[in-house]
Length: 549
Image (cartoon, rainbow, N blue to C red; front, side, top):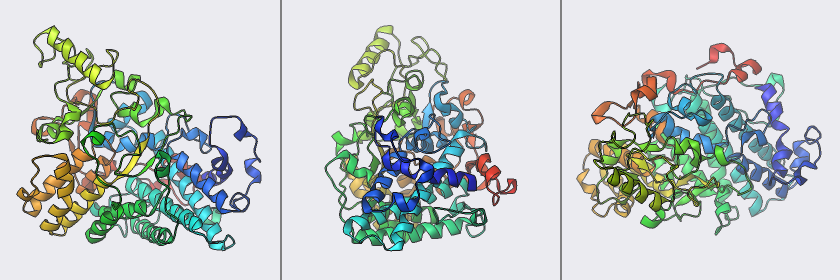
């Protein structure tokens, strides 16, 4: 990692100043002449570095650090990847823009040379090293302590914890299905500069989880005396605050089976973020201004992600070939199980006509679509969906296609926000944690507000034992958080494999999905673990081919 660390460190001033697509940011001190002590001489400079880290979450990574590539735009790719890998976000046809089909077929994260493995690894360590530079400067005690500085401190610790949690959940065996005290984790780096002698080996999963806990506790303490996060604008929720730290601690605890901590932290995280109503839930998940969004990236209009964006990969209203030729569908077993009284069912179009003659299920085009007996009915339904969702006949349709994620400007390539954390997730975490503790009543109470908001006939009391309640909580997570990227980590925590053929089938094509059509559960299949980038093995003397997953 040593060579890569040096490359990442010199990008600090770039993060300070890259705020637009104008030319003026190019007039700067050369990066090799800037040191952290110069770049971080004040709270204002630290905030600029944080703003750069915020931007790195959604920018094309060629703009963020040496070795970045335009094919990935940070979490635009990695958030929906979680549902793409888990088989929740289903491809209806053969399209491979940005390697999205390759990911779905499990032919990317299983290769040490893949772009996804490399960029996810280096982006998260880039985040860690910038957080380290801020934390080191704060520890010097040379900058006056103010509420604003405490907010910066809280964000730095939170970012470091976020990056380590992301790394350990992708590049190591799941905590609950492995042996964390001996399973290899990822290198824990707590300095912004390292000599060759200071490079670190992988350590253990437990080492990483312990550091995450220390960082989140430090973040929560700092936020306790910090100035509050601004509110009222979409960009405000790009900044991290105490709710984000509590939410990440809830995720951390859930992933390791610390059920009591998960429940209490989730309850704290959602305070002040009321559940969305039906109109907001159906509005498209395209802005951080929604009431229950705790954290997300406000994607600025001048950021040229466009065909690298989250919505390009999975929103059926984005005007890109990945969508027009390959509308994304949901697992029909999930959709069919949604009660008719639950308004979330409305965003999945069960009877959309199969307009693509190259559809993977072989039922594309009128005459092959079993849902329609006349051309007129087929065409009328297509036109109705076009009108309702702002698309045209240049977009193919497919049964069970979704309109949960919708562009603010449907049929365009405009960038939209990325949502990372919502209060709904926190209700679900508390419910799952209390169910795992055997507290059926507590779990029902945690789940009731969410269920009753979404379903007019909801009655949580029918799930009156731990087994039935856990099954229901899993259903609610799959439905409420569908498309938001939680499928991969959920399946690892629950030790569930992928079986598109079971129980009537998901609607996925075995020919298209190949070996990913059925995948053994994570506890017996190490293919769930991302490969360490070959470039890291080549550069880091502490990580050898024997350390590869």
